[in-house]
Length: 258
Image 1 (spheres, rainbow, N blue to C red):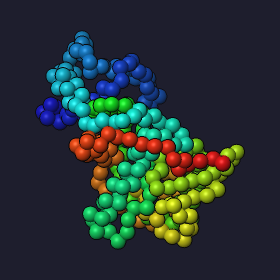
Image 2: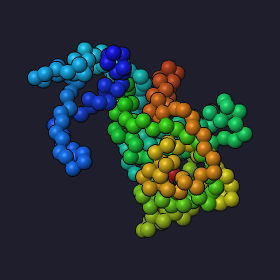
Image 3: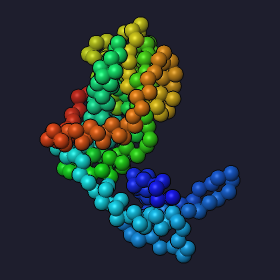
Image 4: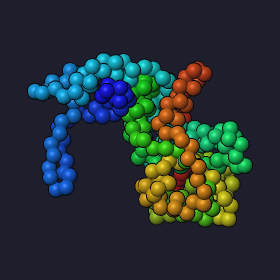
């Protein structure tokens, strides 16, 4: 029964690290051991779970080594913008626009916001394997489209510039070089209109106030896209690979301090 319940990606995420760890629960210290997937697991008394891990170890390694894409450049993670966060924010924005069109919504997605902290590993140059995607995006975040007034977005953008920058798509932010306070904001190359309703695609973690983005609480509507951000990234990488388009990105000063 246990074998039927376990998925290979789940096992992969569980066993990413190799170390002895200590944590505290209800003021009690608990020691635990993480085991690598690259070696046979040996313990004094093998549990059903450990037996299952060993059974699937080779299959897991093979599956996670499948090539899913190709990048023409190394994409690091930096602030206020980076090659990787720009690429992810841009394709997320376009994904939101496609969702609105396919579902015949009376509006489109104006921009995207992702958190740079949600990207945990740079994208390597050359072949991209499945494990790269899981290491870059290890969290179970879901994509949402929210409606917000420009005045509330302005507060959100001010938080972003004061925090050093995040991943944004179809957004241009200019902040004070000394204070990092927002000075100018643009969406679709037009000045942000405080009275206009904009539709933003983002993840549930941020929309619920994660990373200090409490201004998302001012949203006036939201749509659950029923899609995880990691799955969206994987599908994008696969589609570009199938179309023989190597992944690429660029820095364009979408967030600047002047």
